[in-house]
Amino acid sequence: MSTQIYVSKKLEKLIKNYITPSGSTENTGILGKWNATVFFTSGRKKLVAL
Image 1 (cartoon, rainbow, N blue to C red):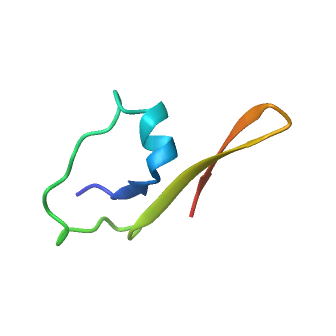
Image 2: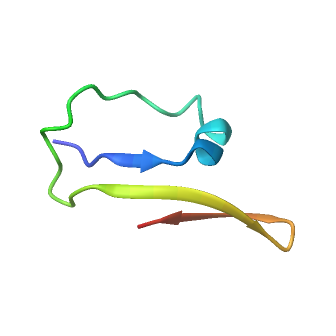
Image 3: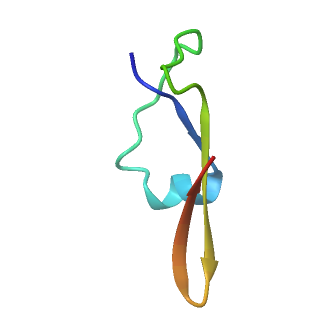
């Protein structure tokens, strides 16, 4: 069982080679559902997962 991480469109553009599409939304991992996004501050990329 794996934990699903939903990504924002901006993050999806950066990591599109590492994403595997998932068709099943019923099986959530032990950690539940997560959301991830990327933002830029002081010229650096920051990744946030909630």
